[in-house]
Length: 79
Image (cartoon, rainbow, N blue to C red; front, side, top):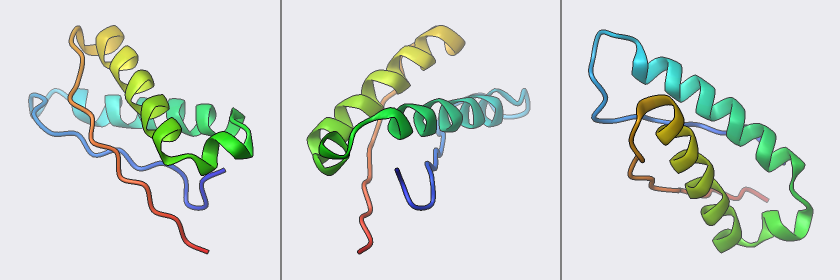
């Protein structure tokens, strides 16, 4: 499970209508739940984590915004 949880930053969404804040909060919750459900082996594999995040972000963006977002994944590991 991620130590500090998931952080989502949106860019390119229309300002003022709250879509960016609502989408970011929804996506953070969805990703946090999905990562929490994965096994340790998957979470140790950066490629698998990146694919999972990209898939979920794409699906949620399509469902909520009507388009698939460009997703950049940054993984920090503190030991």
